[in-house]
Image: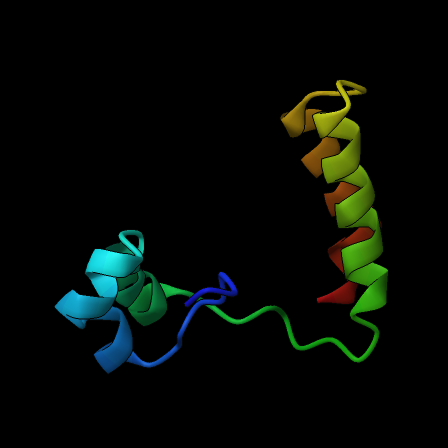
Length: 80
């Protein structure tokens, strides 16, 4: 808990004692139940590198989120 890591165990994130110490854990049970794993790609780096560059560009005000995601989609669309 002190490291800021997320437990993937439902019994831990649903524990009231744990939730009192880490309040956002109360939301994790539903996130863990409905979340999806990252895409299974042999060359995952070909996906994550453009995505990271796009996020950094948006955070540094070099473009809008919509245009950044559109650019990433055009780069990685053939990977899936």
